[in-house]
Image (cartoon, rainbow over all chains, first blue to last red):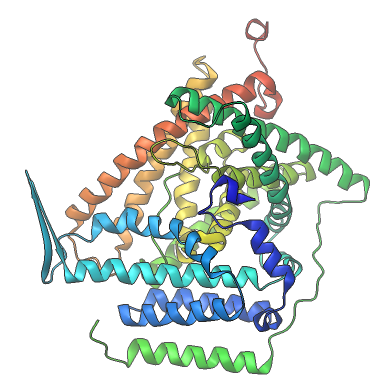
Amino acid sequence: MSDELSPHIPDLDLITFYSEKGTSLFSRISPWTKALMLVLIVLFVSLDKSLILAVCLYLIVLSLYGLSGLPLKKLFQWYTMPIIFVLSLVVILMWNEPGNPIFSLSMPYVSLILTDNGLLLLLTLLFKSLASVTFSLFFLMTTRYNYLSAMIYRVFPSPIDQIFLMSYRFIFITLKMVKSMIKALKSRGGGLLQSIRKQSKMFSEVFALTIIRSYDRADRVNKAMEARGFTGKYVAATRIPVIGTYEYFTMLLATVLMIYSIWFVKLPF
Amino acid sequence: MAHIHLPDGAFSVQWIITWWIIALVILGLCLYWLKKVKKIDNKTITLAAMLTAASFAIFQVNIPLFGGVHMNLTPLIGILAGPAIGGPIVLIVNILSAAIGHGGWGMVGANILVNMTEVSVAYGTYKALGKINLDTFSRAGIGTIAGLLFGSVTMILIILISGIQGVHQDVQTTLYGLSLLTAVNMGVAIVESVVTGYVVSYIYRVRPDILREAIPVAAAK
């Protein structure tokens, strides 16, 4: 579905298909274990300063993703967004870092020098970002919606949990609505670049209609839910699989390995 | 949207925790206001959920301008829902974005602060300009530009205060680099302000009740 909107943005329908299929070994692991591993990965990339460790972490996470039978080709397409995010800022900050010059650019008033440390900064942040993004998608694509909703219900206070749970369901409806409106726009000759003014106005009206229809749908959904006894509490009562003994052991091992590799292993870069 | 487009690992752990704590305090204030002052009802919850979904869905649309632009329309959330409901919405949009392909879980706290600035300034400017009888398009457009400008300033402050791990530039050079980024961001902000202006004026024409505003009799005719 999002394929037609933007192929470089992860397709929610495909993500849901894999998460509900649940055939991989990792789908049977407790969602709490995967959530805690995500926290551990964020901690690791925040403490780590080495490119080699960042690459190792990325390769481990990529292997987990591949072993789960998730689509690798799609994953590389979806990397466009995080790569753009890293480049948009780091490309500005990587210049004139102390180190051995690799490339220099002289312009009036400005002299830009790219050093080995500048390049290391870019690569390190890039691999850290890809490790975090890949594990997030792995987590989503190997965890059933029922479990995710029960986790949201337990972690977030009211009314954030209520808004979160409802919005996750509404996203699919809204995406379908946006898709059909964009299709209607394109079939009438819109969507092609004509002028910034026309283009902005056309897309704005699509966005405005999305909001108006969303508002009306929200009103209808609310009335329908109230008629069925909704009192403002949307309960997600699914029992989440508990963390198994071997999962505790894996997490402990991962934590020890993280501490050891960050503080005790000396790497060249 | 002036997101902090930094990946996990760019900020040190102490700054990740600091920005998360400040963001949670602000979210706590939003929740307090929603529960104790506004007494949030079921309809508002459903509306906030729909607005979150709409914001997320709109982000998926690639607008073919300048090679492709994506928008979250955060100032629009501010104008339509106000800062108190805007708080939970930006939290959820940021978490969903981090989960679905953006990454940057550690940056969510800092991003909430940037987005809350956008939401609050856009809402405040839009309401303030209403007192001088400016047309809806201009009010929404100016509100959006102001929101995104202040959002960018907040982003620069957060980055300057936290520092980026592995960057050894002095503050002045970093500020220079970030100012360049803000200039580019403001280019996109102009497109976003025009889009928001059109969206709000369209809603004002078709469904003014959504904006909780009455159309003046002369304008309605």
